[in-house]
Structure formats: structure tokens, C-alpha cells
Image 1 (spheres, one colour):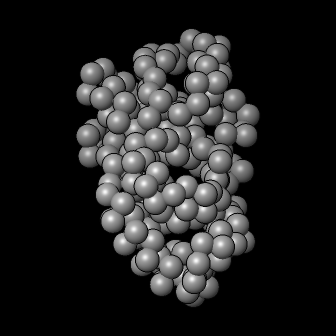
Image 2: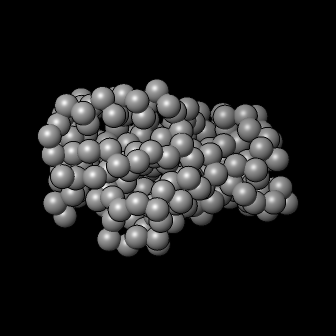
Length: 210
């Protein structure tokens, strides 16, 4: 039996995943987490064979969360299940240590196949995303945001959806001063002068997620 831990900030999504898993005879949900810190606590409290992870949650999130899970349990397979399925997001997740990536709008059979593949020691990329990864922008044409650090990229995304410096600081458990510094650096790297330009840049490059 493959025991999985579901980490997603939306109760309705966790409920849906439970219903999908319930249709199988070889996979079982061993626990759930609604935010990054709860995920880490659950990993320390129970044994699981795989983490099904949405990266955009409260507390620890994004590639930092993937890295934290990897640091806690280096051999534990991590399957990212997300609405953010642009090539650059998938690439960042995989570089951070994720073993697979499935888009949330994929068929349930794709998700189940991914779980089984990772649990058996393999890797999995949603067929919908393979072309985007294979034909991702060549190094010579990399957009400016690919030059950002992971934290700067995370701050860019959260600023782009209208969150304040203080709100981002609370979500990431960092100081407002630190977030302001990240914002200043990313604005310089991207050549942006104000929040309106930042939002337009994020929308133009498909960086805004739900």
C-alpha cells in the first residue's frame, strides 16, 4: 500500500483528492496538511511513502517548501500537483528536488499514474507539460525573471497578486525589511520602476498564479 500525505491549502481540493484515492486499492491517504509548517510537522509525526504537494500555501511555500521537505526526508518522493504549470515553474520545482509534476487540470488517471511511478522509484512529468519543458526558452533567450533568486521570484509572484510587504512577511515568516530588500533587488534586476510595472511584467510573462 502506498501511503501518501496530501498538502494543499484548499479543503475542497484535499476532499477531491481523497475521493480519487478512495477509488484505488493500492494507495491510501495517511494524512493531510493545509500549510507549509503543518506539512513539516506531519512528516515528523507519521510515516508516508510520498508527498502530494501544492507549492502555493501559507507559511513555507514555493521551492523553499520543496527544499524543506527534501531536507527533512531526502529519500521521500515529492509530487507537485499545481495550477501553476508554466515551464519555468515546473523547472524550478524539479531543480529544488521534486520528483514529479502534475497539473491540477489533468485527468485523475494521470495523477494516479504519477503517484505509482514515484512510489516505485521513478520520476514523472505530466504529458501536458512535456513539450513546454523540452522546448523551454533556450539559455540565450532566457527572460530576466529567470535570473532572480528563488526567494526574489517568490516575492515577485506574491507582489503581483496584490499582497502587501507586511502580508508577504507574515506568510513567509520573514521580516518586512527582508521582503523590502528582496523587492528592491528584483525591481533592479527586472528594470521595473513601480508596482504597476511589476504587475504588468508578471502578467505578460504568465507568472501570476491563483
